[in-house]
Length: 121
Image (tube, rainbow, N blue to C red; front, side):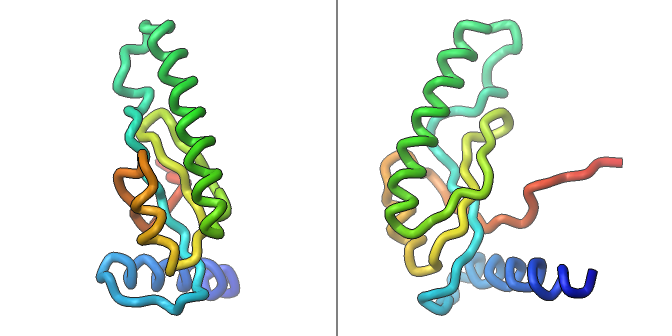
């Protein structure tokens, strides 16, 4: 457990803290971030709007596919995708590429990953 905390939790927490405070990171440091996209999430449509949901699902997948190609060109590696609660892609990306990633058309925000899995009791 201690190895997990030292190898996983501490580096991510430090990177998130630095990103939130806009402090410079080492140019070669990778950080994990959520890239929030402009298409609305699936949760914005009623559950019984099947045709609209299918169309939105297609648009979300297309937007995510298009943007991940551009992020990969910046050195990003995809770690997760979400579409229901929000339209976002989690990536591990070099810290010095974040400003360029923000300028990609369709990207509306970039936030540090604080957790991807929530376990409710």
